[in-house]
Every structure is written in C-alpha cells, then in structure tokens.
Image 1 (cartoon, each protein chain N blue to C red):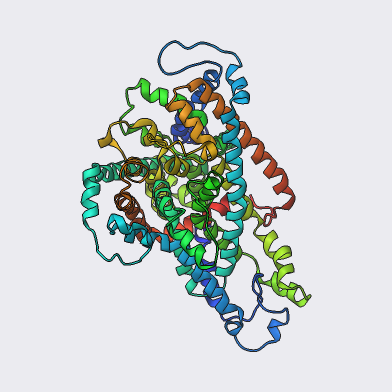
Image 2 (image 1 turned 30 degrees about the vertical axis):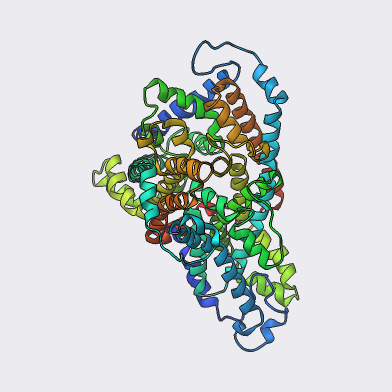
Length: 297
Length: 316
C-alpha cells in the first residue's frame, strides 16, 4: 500500500468520519452526560447523579411502555416471519405469476407509516370496519381493535403485518438459491415434504431468516410512527390508555413534549442496552442454527 | 459479476421450473412418490389451492389500498359502508383537504426534502463506499467495522444532542435537519455500495491509473457509471424513507407551511379522524394524497426496489 493510495483512501472516507464525530460519537457522549442531569432545554440544569436511572426503575410508565413494546414485538416478529415465509413458499414455482404476486405483496410497504396508520384506524373500526366485517363472514365477532385496551397492541401488529412484503421478497430470493439436488436426493431417500422443509429448506434459508428476525426485532423495539399516528396526538383522548404506549412514544413525549431531556436520554441508553442484549442473545442462538454457504466472507 | 445481479437469474430459473417434475421445496408437493407420476405437476390437487391462497393473500395486501381510493371519494356518511364503488363520487373531498391545510405545499416540501435527502446520501455514501472498496490503507478494516456498528445504534441515543446542535445553529423549524445529515453518508448504503464496488475488476481502475486518471476521476468516470443500478436502489430507498418519516418532522417543524406530507397528514388525521366532526373522508383523501406518489414511484422503479431488497439481505 503506497502512501499516496493510503492518503487517497482517507480523503474518500473523510465525509463519513466527520459525520460520525459530529452526529454520532459526539452526541453519544453528550447524551450520556445529559442522562445524569435534569436538562430541560430552558433554564439551569443540574447534575442529578443516578436519579434518572432510579426513575427508570420507579416510573411505572417506563415499565408499562417497555412491556407494551415487548408484547408488540413478541406478537409481530414471529407472526410476521411465519406469514412471510409461508407466502414466499407458496410463491415458489407458480411460474410467471410469481412476479405479479411479489409486486402485490410489496405494494403496502410503499405506504408511508402515517398513511397506513390512518387507514387502519378506519379499517379496524370495531363497529363498522372492513376487517371485522370480513371476520363476520366466517362467523368471528371481531373486537374493538382501536378502542378496547386489550386490542391496541394486536392492532399495531396487524398494521405491521400488512407491510411484511420486504421479508417475502427476501425469503423468495433465499428459497430460489436452495439447490434442487438436495431435495431430489432427500426424496430418493424417502423424505416427505415436512422433513424436507425442516432438514433442507429451513437450514438453507436460515441466513435470510436470521437477518430479517434481527432487523425486525430491532425495528419493533423502536416502533413509533404507527403507534403515534393511531393513538397519540394533541387531542389525546382519555380512552387512549397506556396500553398503546410503546417505548419510543414515551421517550419522545419526555424529550419533546415534557422537555425532560435528561430523563429521556437515560431512557435512550436503556433502550440501547436492551437492543444490544437482545441482539447478542439472538446471535448466540443464531450461531448454533444458521448455515452460511461456503465459508462466505 | 456483482452480487446485485444475482437476484435475476433465479427468477428466470423459477419460471422455467414451473412445469418441471422435480421435487419442490417443501409444502405438500404431493407424496414422495411424485416423480414417478407422469405429467406436469400443475395438475395436482395442490396447485389450485396454492393459487387460491395466493389470491386471498393478494386481496389482503392490495384491497386496503383499493378501499382507500374508494373511501377518499365517498361522502362522510358512506365511508364505512365498505362498498367498492361510491354511490356518489365526491371529488369535493379533495377541495376540503385543500381547505384543511396547505396540502400542495406539503407535497412539494416532501418532494424537495426527499430529493435532497436521496441525492446527498447517494453521492456521499458512494464516495465513502469507494474509499473502502478500492483503497488499501491501514485501519481500513477497523473504520469499516465502526461504520457497520453504527447500524446497531438506536436513533434515540443521538436524537436529543443532534436536536441541540440544530437548535444551536438556529435551524429548528427549517427543513435542513431533515436531510443535512445525509451529506456524510449512511452506514447501510455505504455497506451496500461497497459490495457493489468490490465487484468491479480492479484492473479497470489500474488501467485508468496508468492512463493518468486521478482517484476522483476513477470514482466519477468508472465507479459511478458502473454502479448505476446500485445507486438507483440507494436513491429510491432513501426517497421512500424520507417520504415516510414522521419523527424528524415532528421534532423539527413547527410552522405548518414547512410540514412534509406525513407530518401534515398527521395534523389532518388529528383534527378530522380523531376529533372534531369526524370527517373521515377528508382524512382518507389526504391519506391517498400521501400514498399515491410512493405507489407511482414503485410503478417506475419496481424492479430496482425488489431486487435491491432481495440483495440487501444476502449481504447482511
């Protein structure tokens, strides 16, 4: 490596380094410092030691919002993965129509989150919404999705489920890369479809599955747009109970509505730690099951 | 060649595999004895059921959008009647939306912010990605690891201090904070583009060097033109991300005329669907206006988007 080339390389990546220092590394330090103060944008701020972190523990709404977020993630991530995988497998081998279906399934992903939230506020209406009408056709008496406290998180999961098309596209691509010979060999050995699914298909696409589960979990922990659109706003009805309060909504309220920026910073760090722990756990589990083709990269 | 092209051949392979008798990938392809049965598999009991399920799913995914178009054109009393064709088409709803807020301005704002965000992030990420792909220098692996690690960081951690920066610069209640950070590249796109650049044969660049081409010339004359498909993917992804974003406009914009479309739509939803006289039809008309541009973009860039999604996971 020549010095000339080396210097050239640093010049090319310089924009990222500047951006990293100004908009990531610096703010991380500031955020950490703020989390030990009662900073509120206006007025004096004081160092408060660990008080914010004690409040994380004692504030019941932190606990509620965390529990809500976990519940939502626990509903959406497995369900979304299963639905997307099921549809991707159905899509295989339908020939020319596959392209059409793939496009149809992806279309909702293009819908802005606020628009999807607004639409589903009506579609999920308990009395007159389309979803409950369709459920009625098969004899199911649908719940009050958007007002019954017990159904707020499931309704968030339904909206997310509607935009699961990205995973379908990813799984479809992964499924196409499963060598046919493996299935042929297994069939000659008398393996049925179920066994072939568990022992060939699933291991072969485990990389793609792993990727989407991780990204979906991280995104689910940071769910904001739809929850805020559907259940929060200036008018904020009393009926909109804390059942729909996801973590990012509460963090946002603390930071930019109550201006408790010190406390909001400590919330952000808690979220960061939680996401790190979950991801680390997923990697631990994943390493045991995920098969990477060749020794790849 | 590059990883980005890999997603095309399997699609073609799938099309030709349709009438093949070989085993499928799992779901009820019939008994294991299927290969011995003569004739194309498309006659098995499974195919019609499979198609029926797919059409059902298609309805679930697409019909809400069709419903949206219909609801946006209905009078208030019929929004919930779930009829496909409104008995009485109310183009007037769009006039009402127009009265409710500067919707056209919001759309223009979203286009401007989106184009700024997408253009800046595409160029800056390409520049940085080329730095990582072509040049060999000490610390490269370390810095690239740092780039990747920023993808793990939740936006919430930097949100408040970054707000304080823009506040200090007097940029709050302007649209600059919605895109200016994109000038410095974005980890995911850097990653994506680097993979693409790595697929370009190094000899191409060496030859250009011999001919006296500068580093920047190599980037602009060779790397960028060859990376066009990848650049389009990045551009389209960012345009969509910017168009959808609600959080930043909520944080930074206070003046209504500066709002982007999602922020404006939230305002309309708040005042027409969540309170007041409950004019859902107006909220739906605004929702349609916010959605339509993205659907149109999808119509044009569909192949790029779908291939890009498929590739992003493969590299991840």
